[in-house]
Amino acid sequence: MATLSVIIPTYNEESYLRDALYSVRFADEIIVIDSYSTDDTVAIAKAYGCKVVLRAFDNFSNQKNHALTFATCDWVLFVDGDERIPYLLKNEILEAMDSGKHAAYKLNFPHFYMNRFLYHHSDNVTRLVRRAGCRFEGSVHEKLIVEGSTGKLKHPVLHYTYKGLMHYISKKDSYAWFQAEQLLQKGKKATYFHLAFKPFYRFFSSYILRRGFMDGIPGLTVASINAYGVFSRYVKLMLLQRGMQ
Image 1 (tube, helix red, strand yellow):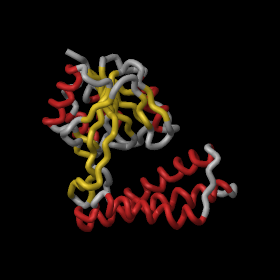
Image 2: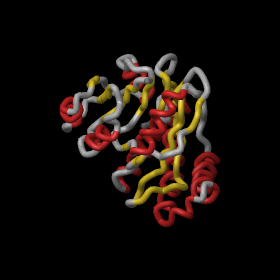
Image 3: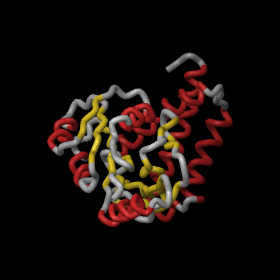
Image 4: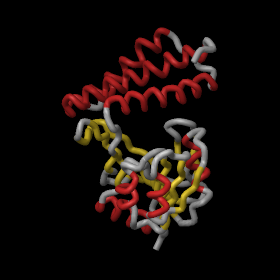
């Protein structure tokens, strides 16, 4: 049977980590790569028998690529501290690993907000991959590069996406700085067109095209904050262009 390493990047995840670790207890090894948490995250991981790696955070790709060097199993599953692998998905993961049909698999992540899962705000992200030859690229919304075909698993990950409104907004602001710096490095320039049109289109895409309106008030809230995140990205890019931060 194929073996599985689980990699969990963490920073101050003490309130979520125990449940995440319990949900992946079927793995052959669990590697927690921690960005020097100031709470009990590391103690919880060690008590659970995880392999703990400490590394100062610089970007998401470097963090996960570093963790990959400690993995020893045939396959790797990447899980965040606020995510859970339910029983049906666990079985699907084990079957996919043994089938040898694909080199990687995308998992479905419906957002969780205002105490409900938003099935019209979901993402399909490659998280299960053969260890040999895989790597991450990109500093935010990192992309997993694999050698071979990619399939898709049916059962969703339970992702407790946001801890509250202010956490949601601060997360968008944090990502916006990374994205703005990436755009600046690529020579992109922010214009008033970007500030006006891009956020509007993100709202329209999230709320209308992806049918976020069917998720009620939480769907409207998520679409609005997603639009704000895009606006924040281009404002920050404009500030960086002018030497301001």
